[in-house]
Image (cartoon, rainbow, N blue to C red; front, side, top):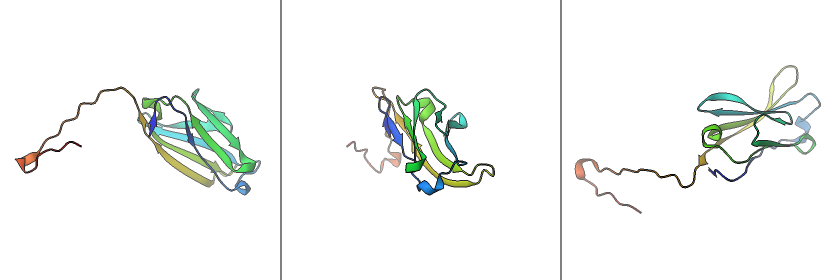
Length: 121
């Protein structure tokens, strides 16, 4: 979980031998609006995303700054694909939940059949 004002690093670490001059690197995002690319190779496709990209070290991390509740809640996947064939070489995924501070929630507790008394901790 991530508070709205923090920066989140999603690590994508792989054996450096998997990265070659033809390897393609992708970050995808699936949220309530659907699936789209968050980054392709070293290019982040959203202004509040950055890429820490060092294939020789086996690193392709996505950094999310000022996470947005609507856009960044969802599943993020890192993919390494073989250039030309598109065969998957490596993948890792994360589910991100963005929390918003200072929003009020209305909680209701009900006891059915009156068998239990609600207890608040």
